[in-house]
Length: 120
Length: 113
Image 1 (tube, each protein chain N blue to C red):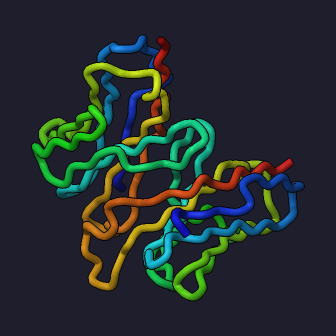
Image 2 (cartoon, one colour; image 1 turned 45 degrees about the vertical axis):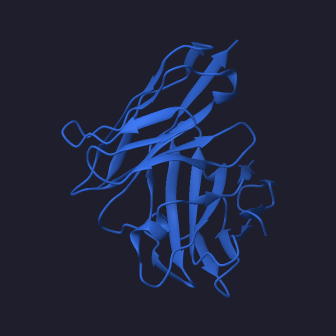
């Protein structure tokens, strides 16, 4: 597609339920990132994919959070047993990336519009 | 670890006023520095960047200079417009784990006619 697409745009769930958030990056972008934007907290890094592997998952806040990427394209962020503190906007971004890990390939991130998650 | 500190908002200005949004960073070595902007209802987009000390990034009338001695990357614009109303994020990419961006908390700018 023309840009990074995220779905759903809004998700309301009950505490304790599992949720899945989807990200479709720009075609051909090998690097994919998940961030979380909470009120007053700025953007919090969650996980980075290069292709299908995740060399940096240091930002995942707990083992309730997991993410996968298949076919070097679509990524899914799963939150199990949601808690109220998980309420936030979850943002996905992609960049050209590349095997050579050339710095300039990672310098411009293209963001989706995010998924607003509300846990009641 | 690497971090970015931005001035808190909101910043409220009248049209044609001068804008400064302060940003300082903590990082080892020589990070790359960025300003991203989030217009209402839209996703974040890159506004400008600087990759080494004393570089000046510029775009759409906005400027920021990479100051190694003060570890700063303040955003400036000489004459703001109503259409500049948005949230501005300062960010860095460090030398280690360099693939990810570390963002500040964002500063909301409100420009009135």
